Length: 124
Image (cartoon, rainbow, N blue to C red; front, side, top):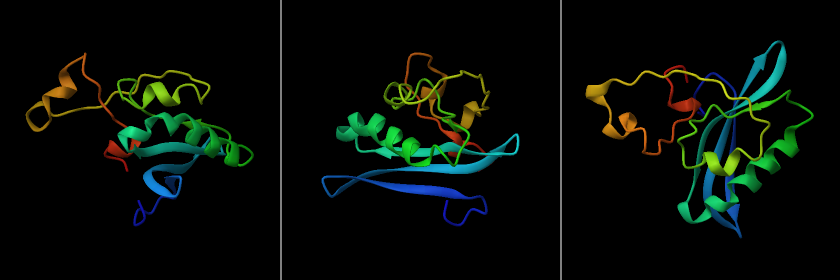
């Protein structure tokens, strides 16, 4: 993300002075307005409950600068249940192509969770 020519905002996440993960947003334009796209997210599993609080705080810190925040996250992601409360949600189907011979079988099991975010795409 640091070497990418696009602009990213990288947040390190600390709980009680202990590093527990990161959240990365990509800055972009949509209809000539500044917007944020959630590009990547990682929190230690024992700190997942903080996800909602962290996303909310980031939105509050930036709400005057950006028209909206877009998650671009699979609803099958285990993070989804923590962040969908933070954002006014408009669901949009965004297809992604997975090569069956090169991918883990979990991607093809409808009952398995998949953590897939914007930065997992080829255009990042």
